[in-house]
Image (cartoon, rainbow, N blue to C red; front, side, top):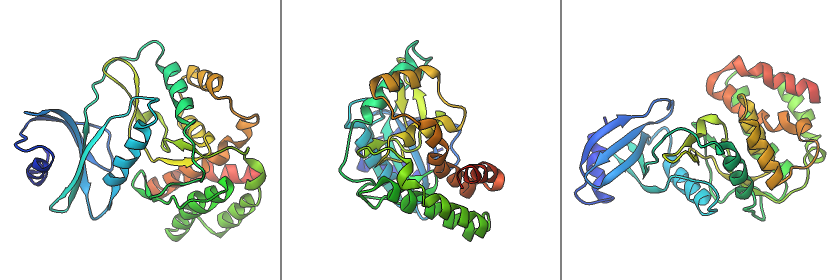
Length: 288
């Protein structure tokens, strides 16, 4: 059930709100959460330990709104964040669920391509956020290769080394890879990214449309999202076809794909342990 401290705190959002029913949402490994039916309507709520994940939901609130402002894909509206007796929470619009429309992946591909047309002058973001339960650093730079190395790979590599998951040989191989990055990536303006784009972070809305959830947004190279979508089995082929019809990628993406995915793989090493090390080392061996 929703902690009583949160129930009481929700009156800051809507005076006199009463929770009449709660249905837990399965699958979350960081947060508790689920659907709440109230006298003021239906909402989705998530909560966690404020001390372990400071400002997580404030960052998610900002990220959801950044995605919503593009008017490209369905994104749940964040409504309120709060903290009560050491527990942080976020309240957002409830999105119903149903079966996919026949053009579900075509709509997702076209929507993501249009989302990626939202550009910035710098790589990064004006605030940090999270990738899973790990901090994601977004200090802005002018160079994608520099941002990818300094803000994405190096912090995760250092964490893995500090925790005894990777060794100095791994570090040396990463340093060799870093020398290649400037010539590896095609030059493009920074695009707004979902940042954690895999099948667990889209859902099917009540009318069968794609809806993106749980973002880790920043402005980066748009191929990061496409590569991430391929990491755990990939999306339907129609997604990639329509994406490239709407916003064609530069040639040679298949040769760069695994380098982009070193970031989420390192995140998984740090979250879940050495079972992902083989993939990381295989990529390093191929490039170094």
